[in-house]
Length: 150
Length: 440
Image: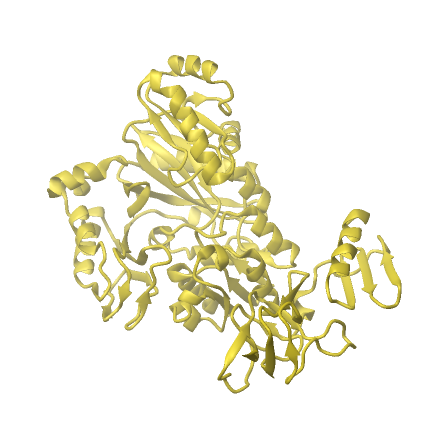
C-alpha cells in the first residue's frame, strides 16, 4: 500500500459515517479518527509480526441469533460479514430499539474483506427490535432489525 | 495445519469433499445460496453459511461473501471443488492473501494454464507432442490464410482463454477462414473478455484421452493412469472409463512421462488433468485443467488413491502419500453421469450398491432439484476386472438405480453403453452420432 492508496482510504473514510478506522496489513498500519483533527499514518515501520489479517483473531464465529423469531418486517443483511452497530468502539450505536429512522439513515456497518459497508434504511421506519449483537458474524439474509414502516 | 475447511461449492462435489474431510478429522464449513437451503452438503457439514440469493453470480461466484464466510467461520483452508471459482487465479490469490490455504495449484500456474497459447508453448518446451498448428495468436488474417494453406484443411480456431466450446470453430473451406476467425474472436471476446484466438490442424473424430496428475510442493509429480471421455454431447462428457481401450501400457508410460516432465517443469502442485487428443496411436496435447475433475472417481476406483485427500495433504505441505511405482493399472472402471432432464422433487430414491459400486450424489427423498444449477444429480461408478465385465456390471447396477420424481437420462445412458459400437471400444468424440444411429 503506497501513499496514494492511503489517501484514497482517507477519502473513502471521510465519505462514511465511521468515527474511527484501524488498518493493519504487513508492515503498514494506520489509524484514522474523526473529531480529533488527527489523521495519523505510520508508514513502513519495523517489520510487523503476523502479516496475515489473522483469521483466528477475528470476531467470534458464534452463528447468528438465538433470539425469538421476528414476527414483523425485517431488514436483512445483504452480504456476509461482521456487523458493527457503532461508528467507533466507544461511540453509541447508529440505531436503538424504538428509534425512528429516515430513508438513507445509516443502520449499521457490515465489514467484509476489510471493507466497511454501510447499511442504510431504504424507507422511513421505526426500529422495533435489534436482532443481532454488535460484532457478530452475519450471513446473507440474516435478519438484523425488526421494523415498522412509517 | 488444516483443521477446518470451507467448501466453496455445492452438489455432489461438496458432499464428496466433506466426506474426505471427515476421514481426515477436519471440521467442515459449507456455503449455500438461498436455493440450496435444504441441500445435502448443508446438512452434512459442521457449519453452513448462506452466501447469497440463487443466481451463482451473487452466491457461489461472490468472492467477497465466500472469503468473509471463510474468515468468520475460522476456516484454515478453502477447497473450490469443480466449476464455479475452481480455475479462477484471482480468487485463489484473494484466498491466500486473506491468510487462508488454497486447496489447488499455485495461482500463477492456474493463470498460465488458463491461457491456451502459453500452455501449448510450455508443452512444446517440455517435449509434449502438440497438434500441428500455427504458432502463437492470430494477428494478421492474410498471413494466417497463407499459413493455413501450408498446413492444410480442416483446421480448428480456438480461443486462448476458452472453454466449453465457446470461441471454437472448425473450418473446412479456405474461403470461410477469414470470416470464421472474426466470429470466433468476437465470441471469445464476449465470453471471456479476451478475443485472442489461435489455429490448429483439426483431427477428425479423435478420442478424448486425459491423464490424472498429482504433484506436491516437494517436487514430486505422478500420473495415475488415463480416462477416456470420448462419449460426449456438445462437449459435455457422458461416460468416462479407465483405462482407455486405445492406450497400451507402452503408450501410457510415454504419455505419463511426458506429462510428468511438463508438470515438474512448471512446478505444479495439487491435482490436475492433462487432456490429449488421441488418433492412430498418437497423442497430442490439448490443455491442462488445473483442478479436480468430475470424473476423478474413475481413477480412484482403478488406483485406490483418494484424490481429494491427497489434494488436502499436498496443500498442507505434506508429500504425496503414493509413489509412481505404487500406481498399478490392472482393472477397469467406468462412470456414468446421471443428469436431470428437468427440475423436480425426489419421491423415491434408492441408489444401487454392491462390490465396487459407488454413487456420488446429493439426492435424498423429499429433496427438490432446483432449476438454477448444473443438471448432473448423480455419478455412478463401478469397478471390474475387465471392460466387458465392467459394461455388464454397469448395466445391472443402473437397473438397480431407482429414482422417482426427477426425470433423468438414465435409460439413454443404458442404451449407449449397450450398443455394439460402445462395447467394441476405440472410438473418437463423434461416436455419439453413430451410437444414436445404432439405437435408432
